[in-house]
Image (cartoon, rainbow, N blue to C red; front, side, top):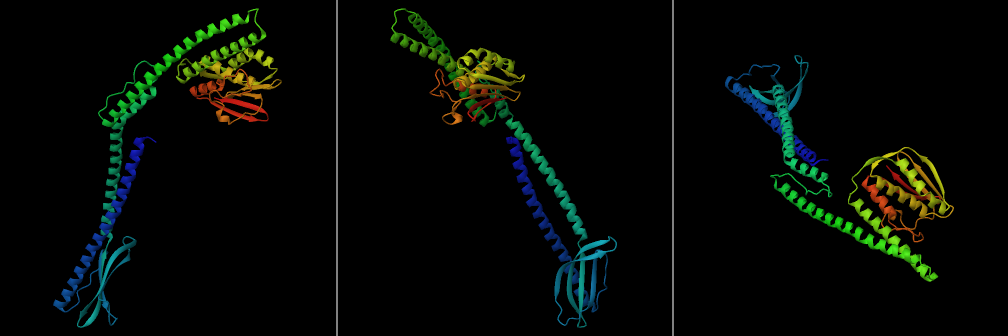
Length: 419
């Protein structure tokens, strides 16, 4: 949820709570004031009736109507109540509904005879006034609420536009570009500090990236050259006729180690370039054709290990990625299936529009499966393995948002890449 939406929601909830409490409080205050006003009128009428009896020594004439009524009758109780206030409902034939009334009952004496008076005041006018007032207040509250939310949203959107502009520029920023991170100027102090921190951080990261890239390129060039020289010299020594068997074995081991070092250097440099996202060229690749090419190239190694290769299905599948990385991805998966197998074993390759799966026979993995894609994780029994092939697979999958998975069941390893 966006921060503007959260802020507006909080304002809405707080405003609704305040308006609800304010509305209930206003309702109670209006109710108390209306009842006080009606009660004052009832007691005023009572005083007028008592004053009329004292001056004229006769009962006043009884009036009645829809809005009010004065009822009188002889009190039969020897000790009647002095006065009592209550609410009642009286049916109105005109409105065909029950109308709320406020009732005051008291006793007045005329010629020492008790008479019970009941004064009724209609609350209909007050209720209508109350309903109209509450309706007007409700509309005012709604308009205030909508206006408050709208104004708050517009102010927040105007204030936070610089933040979203900065966020957009950071998302588009790439370490491979030569220009530093360019951010818009803002008058908001907090966003100024944020931009300054981001500039300093990206400048430092960009500088470190360039230094690492330069070191990688230098290391690649400086290491490969002496390795190639050492390798060529070893090959010349190995072709000598006066070598003893012990010397020949030592030279063969040195030659193998040098080749392994050269391959490890190339793999580490490739892994670094992938992590630095230096492979920007993308194209729509026919993955089924690349799988077929890799299988043809590795057929000699498959035959050398006496393995059975099965291709259950190679459906036409196209992926948008770098061709070189796609070939590295496929070759490392297939080489892993060949190396971690045994003579007479089998390899099964299947490709669908959803995933690529390579299954091979072999011994069960020693250790947790989640460590399989880490660097330098390989079986000690596997000769020639650098332990970095599946790390390359993992980095390439991360770069193109592919999902590798591993499982082992019924004596078969299954390595699948979901697209």
